[in-house]
Every structure is written in structure tokens, then in C-alpha cells.
Length: 125
Image (cartoon, rainbow, N blue to C red; front, side, top):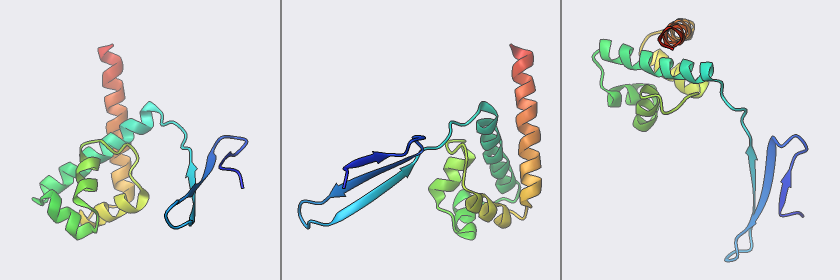
């Protein structure tokens, strides 16, 4: 079996690792992600800001939100501070449910905020 295989379109990479101690084999499959556009990154940042604003408006701490949504405190803080440009659907759904906001409303507000921020950047240029 080859030690390292990459698919023809370079989206999937498979690597075989052998542990010398126990002679077991572990196959690691990694999938490349397409680069995010600036708009997608801004949408993710705005989503995090909106979640933080909702949490503050409901007078909840990040740890309370984490507990209520079954999401780690690190994930909550990372999303709110924009360190996670594309949080997973399940994570956003759990946070939105705990904050009593629909995913549709959250998405619409993030799109509007991202567009407004994009227009501000064009005016400032």
C-alpha cells in the first residue's frame, strides 16, 4: 500500500501511518477546503458579532450560553471574536436555539451587516 496518495483533483489526501510500538496501521484522510472569499469571511465575523450581541442583550455569560447550547466555551468565544470564519451548522443552530433566534433571522442579519460593512470599506477607500 502506498504511504501517501493524493486524488487527481487534489481534494483528498490519504496517508498511512504505522505505529512502531504496536504494529497497528492508521489511515488518515484529509480533505482540502476551498479558500473562503472575503464575503464569506465577513459573513462569519458578523455572525459571531450578532451572537455576542444577542447573548449580551439576554444578559448571559459565554459560559452560560456554552452550557445551555452544549457547545464548548472556547468555541463560543472563538465564534464571537471572529476566529472561526465558518462555524459548523450544528454549532450555529445550537447557539441560535439557546438565544431564541431563528437561523433564517440570524443569517439575514449577518448578510445585511456584512453588506453594510463592505459598503463602508468601499466608501473609505
